[in-house]
Length: 163
Image 1 (cartoon, rainbow, N blue to C red):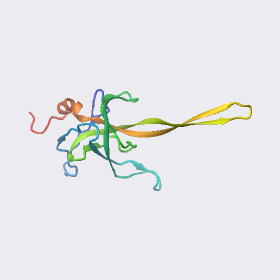
Image 2 (spheres, rainbow, N blue to C red; image 1 turned 180 degrees about the vertical axis):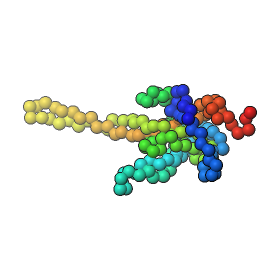
Image 3 (cartoon, rainbow, N blue to C red; image 1 turned 120 degrees about the vertical axis):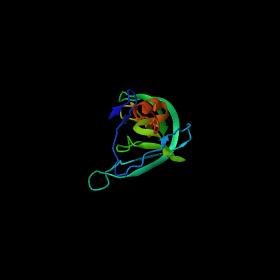
């Protein structure tokens, strides 16, 4: 296994002599906000008896491209996705919905954003007021944008036909 020096990304070499795994043809590119994205993985499902990984496909949009500084210590150019990245989806491929044979990203983590909804005021017996602010929390997925680590990918695993 080879770890990227700053992005939340690792390459694992496998020998698929049985031909079960179909590799992606290439690293593609999502242009920016509004482009469709699809991710696939095995998030755990707690609604069954015990926890079990369930194959799931997530479909949404790239909301923005940004320089992500992760609380995990990583730093990389990322796509913010309109769907969250639950446990079991991270590390999975993200593809452009019109070219699913090209991988464009790797699902990495989830970030939360909060929005002010309202303030509630309550008057106590002694005349003191108590204020409570209500916020809505939204989760967004973060994917490592592979086009920005392409040189590292090519150095680590040379493209087919390269010397």
